[in-house]
Amino acid sequence: MNFRLEFTPKTLAKPIRHEDKLFLIGSCFTEQIGQKLAHHKFRVIDNPNGILFNPVSIAASLSTYIAPKIYAEPDLFYHQELWGSWAHHTRFSHPDKQVALGRINESQQKAHRFLKEADWLMLTLGSAFVYEQSGAVVANCHKVPTDKFLKRLLSVEEVVDVLEKSLRETILLNPGLHCLVTISPVRHLRDGFVENNRSKATLILAVEELCRRMPQVFYFPAYELIIDDLRDYRFFAEDMVHPNYAATQYVWEKFRDTCFDKACIGLLDRIAEIVQAASHK
Image (cartoon, rainbow, N blue to C red; front, side, top):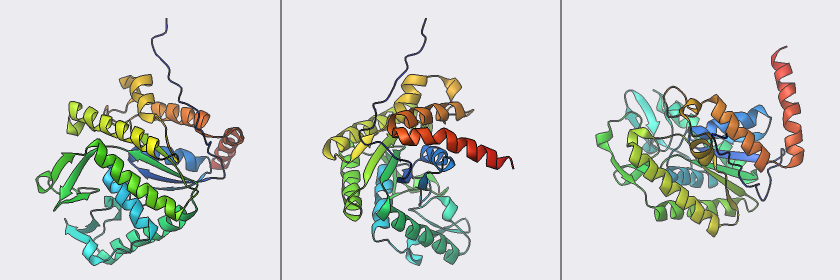
């Protein structure tokens, strides 16, 4: 008797080649897949602003890479003896504001150069909830008390509009760019069980509409592979929220088999063998 329904994603209409340059941005699940890609010697850049969860912050960060934006002292804030940016993860924060700005602007320049030449933009959306301060969405709360922010759930229309605008701007910079969107399977249970499902549903509906509007945009069902295919707490870490190694490996294998071209798939095992051999020297 079969106690599980396995799900095989559709083959990507435009397969990814090993020589392609991949720009990854989004939630912590982005970094897990990014590590797999880097291990197999793909040319990647991963989260130039650090981990980003909501579509508004992802879209805003993409827009800053186009020019690119140069951050200055007015873009920073001071909290708990650190200078940080509301648009960036805490890994950019530093007690010296010039060091913080240096880190941020160096990353901006690298992101700009890579984005101009990238073949693929891979977005992983984590949550449709946003935190606003003075009417502006922040990418990270930097351990500032939550009562200092207004929390709200984006509508499907808001998600579609903000991502479409940003993607169209990005494609003007790089007309050959294609975009692969995923929904993170990491459950944001601090929002609440019901609220997390509403958030994920908002993202799923928004991505469907985005793919309909833009032929350059494709969807990879990482969320469905974890939640509907594996569908078991043994595939989650001890926090019962993040997918564990086995789950991530399963998604990677499905991603490899449905999104890479045949030549690329043929290379991966050989590359893994060489990398493993080199690590044992």
